[in-house]
Image (tube, rainbow, N blue to C red; front, top):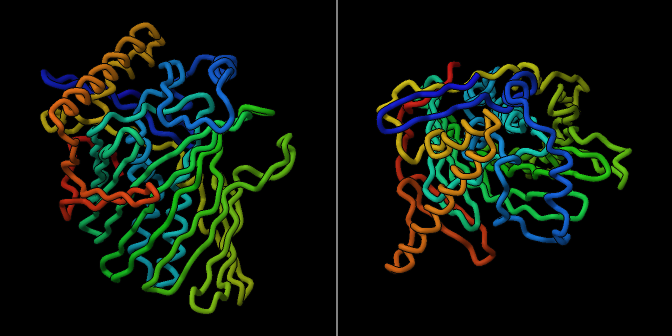
Length: 385
């Protein structure tokens, strides 16, 4: 389902989220891009940084990367985020945070990637009392800042995402730099976690998977989890399970393992109590990320010109119609406008400054961000709980 809203000032195109069943993959029938994928990377040397690599629209899904980041928070079947705030004790809350972290891993579509957001682009969506706001705070390198608040559950989530893709001959790996911080304010608990990395394999078998180790830490409760996404495979891809999730939850002071984690992020992940030997379902992907609802515009007058669904509306609509000439021209116009604005700022000696986040970088090139406002307001775009 495509939600298209017409307004004198702005037009927004919203498409189905990435989901395990249904969603964008089912509703958008992409052209056969496998041969084009091989041709696209022909001549690119292994080790090449693809941060500034420009893709033709044929390889784009009809949505921005900001929307994908936001969907991982506001598009959900069973609400694992609310479970985090409703846990009876620190163990219930911590295991719920681990389950919620796993739920942010969404199925990918091989050969398609979202639009690289323009500088200052925003995405603002509400789901019930949860309000989510994302802003592109840097274009080169691409860095996105996310702030979400839920006043009913007293939850705050802050994330800074900086993907760094490189080509390695047989595929592309995007290492996702930046920390994510979830605060359960009723309990004065703060949880820090990383994101899994994205691995796109071209040879020997085409695939798109999440990989790498994710650490989840809560100094307030003294608990820590180490979760590994995807088992290692041989060169020919004949061993291992690319969608596996394995890990453990430990007491950070004693390093004693309390729970063991095992399963698949696209199926069921189980939690085993090491003391009693009893197990239970920690996360069920069928409940969490299937048949997700598409957001819609509730307040057309509230849409900003910087909203992702507005910025990329013409390109998205052309992609959905397989009108590649129009999609290419519309995307080119956006990119040329951004280059012109950058030249104008440079000529005036001005640096672009985020309107919604304070931003800092380290000597190592890592990024961090803090929201300027304490709460995210209700959005003009909403998705039904």
